[in-house]
Length: 406
Image (cartoon, rainbow, N blue to C red):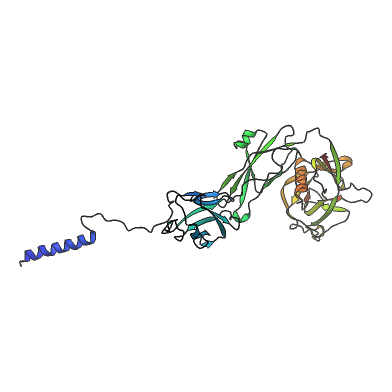
């Protein structure tokens, strides 16, 4: 064999080796990816649909097939409801005539959770063959916001207070923090189509800062936003109407029930039985005894006297406290703490006394009466003053006078 022949043979062998590795003359196919069972078989109707998002909490869980089933093969060991890999308790109902399986969870569905319904190969067709030889499943995700329901006042109700607070149902914190946007108007369409300005509301209650319109219907709607999941839920349009502006009124005296203070210069708590010390460097709290019945308030007036008497430029302000407190354990700068906006600012009253009134205070007091959640009020003053709160010969001293619609 000549050297040239040997060279041609070596070259041919090398090319054959390369073609063997690269599959010369053929198009290489990529490796087959593992099969994911995310398809919906033909002839199957699902409720909720596969991969559905924000499914209502009370939605039925059903699969309807286009082939008859061996109903005896459907049992707790051939059909599963799961969250992740954990099985979720359920019972099932088989409707042979409709070829339908319904799963009924034994516990309420968990808000925001993704559920898997798995049909194993042990579920058989009527002819004895597996319904799905490799098994099959579908998934859906439950809403993370409870449907907006249960409005207070009730929808289309009449004769409501002109300061009625609004309430609706809340979503549990375990589903994520839900905040709200509130739409208010006397024009239904501007609320229904969300054209009214949106008010940001952190909880499922809104206390107005001024009275509602008393001569026409007031419309309102809520939008809920789950900050953890991003889901947005729109509520229906609700309405209410207040009492007439010329409705008859009456009044009741609401006595002060507890008060206490502590100052930077004298940090020991003080719960004087007759007066309350208030000043620029003082923590002072006061609480009134709410009426047992809910009143449709018209006005609130707190007239009080103090030492020294009213002087030009002296003001006191009232805000709600964050939490309940003990009158004889008020601690300067720590307990209690004020929260929310200023509800009332004092002005000069009769006989050089002080007068507190205002629509925000009326609304706040009425909401406290309705929901029984008044920890009390935090009182500040631009100058030091000792407010007179108790005299056995004057039952109205320190009391608020509430005017309400009968």
